[in-house]
Every structure is written in C-alpha cells, then in structure tokens.
Image (cartoon, rainbow, N blue to C red; front, side, top):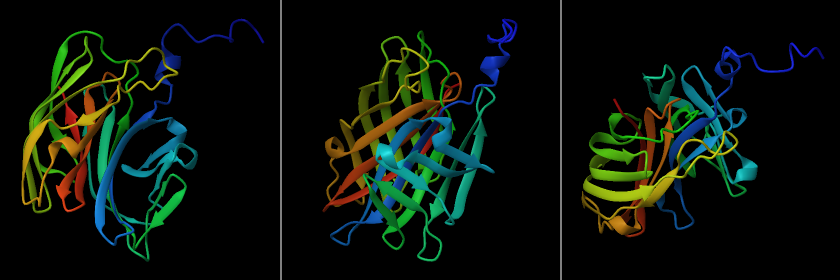
Length: 258
C-alpha cells in the first residue's frame, strides 16, 4: 500500500472516529433459592462491541464468557432519562421491566435468569473516558438515575492520589431511607488505551444509617463505581446494601462534576 495511506492522519480525525468503550452500572432483583427477593449490583467497562444502546435505551451489556451478560430482549423499558456531559457525549439511564411474557435475561456465571425469577433491571450507561485526569480534584454531585430517589451528598475525587471519598450520601430505595453514608476507595490506574480506562473502584461503607431496615450494616454493604464521559465528567455510582434478615436493596445513579 502507498505510504500516504498507511498511517493515521495528523489532524486527529482518526481519534475522533474511535468507537469508545462503554461504562454500564446495573442493579437487578431476583428471587433466590430461599424464595427471597434480593437486589445485587455491578459496574464495569465494556468494549463497544459488548454494550449496545439503541434509541437511548440499553439493549445489552457484557458477555457470557466474562461471567455477566445482561440482555433486554423484549422486556418493557421504563424510567428512561439522559444527560449531555460537558464533553459532548450523553449518559443514559432506565429500567427493564421483566415479566413472564416479556422478560429480560441475565447470565451470571453461566446461569441464565429470566422472569418470574428475574425482576427489574436498572442501569446507567455512557462512554468510557479516553483518558483520566492526572491533576486536581473534583466534587461529583447527583444528576439522575432510575432507582435511587432523593439522592444527596457528594463524591470527592483526588485525581493525583486516585482517592474517592463518599461524603454523607443519602437516598431512598422503596420504603427504605439511607443517610450519612461514608466510605473511601482508590480507583484503578490507567496505563494505556488497551487497559480499562474508566478508573473502576469499589469498597464497603464505613458509616451510615437506614430508616426502615431490619438491621442495617454499612460495613457489609458495597459501593462500586466507574467514571464515564470522555474527560471523566461523570461517574456511574452503583450500590447494594445489607438491610437485615438476609435482605438487600440496591440501585445505580449518575453523578457529574462541574
């Protein structure tokens, strides 16, 4: 081939045409072997081929080989919303409503779950960062989502030390009200574009209260997150919480920074 065409153009157009990875936060409910409805959650970054959004609705995320695959199939979509981020990309959120006649499907470690065992699936999805900031700090505030209501508090991030600090988070899930949630984590470094670029993090809460829980234990409850948007302007925050008696509650929410 001619040497004129065997390299990327210097005007940046090749980078602009790059299909970005996708960050997806999910919270899902299903009936366990003890006939108890529980909620779990996950957050991860996927290659563009493994996560698909159509008409502002997430259609699929993950792969069976990775141990997690979520597929809307013919489940009804509800609670959808979107927000344009400062980099020009868009974050979306919504719910899949699984029923025996129109169910989504989750494949978890080789086990396929559909309605009536599988209940609602909530999600937040957006482009993964091209690069993570390496200087400065930012405070992320609640912006929108399908499952946590009345969200308050902030998430502080230090882009130098990679520290993430939850500052008195609060939200409602059904008839449960959580408040004063605190915790900290260190997000993953990013060495090159072949690596996961969204600064994933997770941890257990160090404090907080729940009104309506049987026996809330912050230390046994989990938060998970990934940054999203080309310049890490957003954050997919996902959580599931031990509410006592073997029960759990969970959800996912989009946070953004100025």
